[in-house]
Length: 245
Image 1 (tube, rainbow, N blue to C red):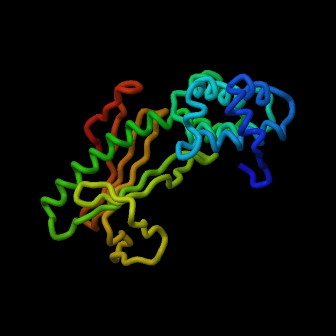
Image 2: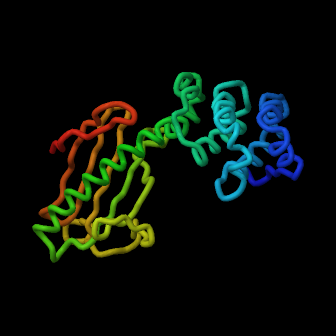
């Protein structure tokens, strides 16, 4: 949220004592500044480190209210604030946004789509990580002297042109995910004569609307390629097809 938006003890008191009815009165009103201040205040309450228990009794109603704010006649900055709360502190499904997706402004659609699909992509991501563990273990058996860890990168189609955007990076070491080492990224690092990274790498992208997943691997000149998967099943019951070259 923009740095010039602030909130006071008055907003915090309103949330604690007035509950969802008081929140709804402000967020469905016409005062944009009051809406943005209250949304900024709600960020504090929705952060589990701070005030989550205060809003727990009516969190489901609050989520519905935030969804509705995005598809009704609010200024774009208010919609962006509401969407930020949903994508950063909540978890789908978001049925109101999904039902009214065509009514969302074009500039918000990529981030709304991201919020709608977060919980689905998380399931598929776990399936792909299991697949990566399997493939990596097979290659380590064949080349134990080479592979002691592998980078895993997750691309997400979130920009307005639908181009992949690097979303998540982590290190898989001895089959376990480690977050305490930084991916070298574009920093200088050794490459072989064909430009492959000296450190082995998996990179995957989930194309949920197409029910597809793409997994590329770059281990060495002789060991690189692309695998394609069909995403099978429906929400909460996803699986992956056998890989296809």
